[in-house]
Image 1: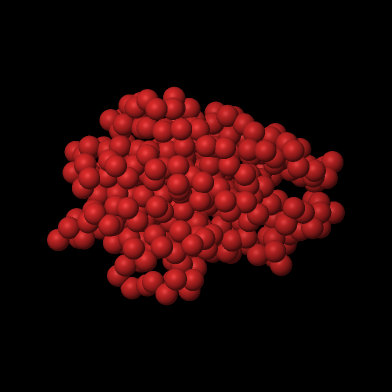
Image 2: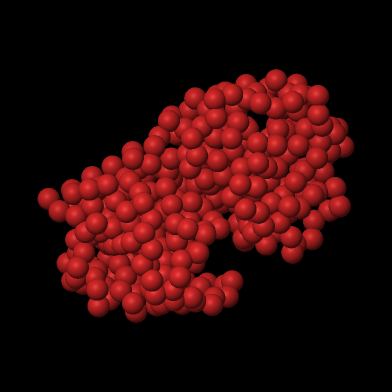
Length: 344
């Protein structure tokens, strides 16, 4: 099967969850298939095809975008303008988020099998069009499925859930040193829904009763003002990110809402327990005591830090959850089944 994958992020030099996602999914897609991946952000020379585990990765141009919703239209137009003449060579198209919307529409017009894979839903017009025109719409959680269904009235067999898999092989043991001051790490890119300032009040309340440190990292976090008692690591490399997870006693995922939140699985894979917001896809697949609300966050943190053996127990539960046993082969198998079902 000849498959076209379209996304904002490339599988090399990415910086966000979608980049992690495609970097893990594409190698599985390439097993037994011919796969091209078109993207706009990453360490790929513009205009050249780069091999990535058997996938041809093409970045047609560098697109300058701002931080409002026009990013979706600019990237969608940039990708579609390069793809519309070449779509006929493929059997199926998998497009990720609004950036792929116009490519999905063009592919649908010429009768290709189309999967619109939504990792978030911002409510732009081109997303509505892609949802309605694609053969099948894949969401990464029940939370996102509900959001799409309520906004577009698309539901039933057309709207499917495919959960991700852990981006890294799970660690086999809990390795924290109990004698040190507890460290809480918050990954955040400071997007509208991932701003750690939303939990500052709860962290402040907890600090009045327990002694712990807080560190925030993520692309661009060095440019945001946070209280002096919070350390900021800023933009970090992939190796530094994993080291920060391993250095933490607890990872606090922020997302209000967060369609899934791969950082939860990243943290667990590195031997660190995580607390996830109730409005997240991660809350659907992790044990109930992993989940917080803004009303109970301070209390939940204090209970865990009061006896740090509870942190190890929480991680053991999370490590044994079914989502941590998923593989990216499983993820691709579910996509592939949907494509073949549509072919039938």
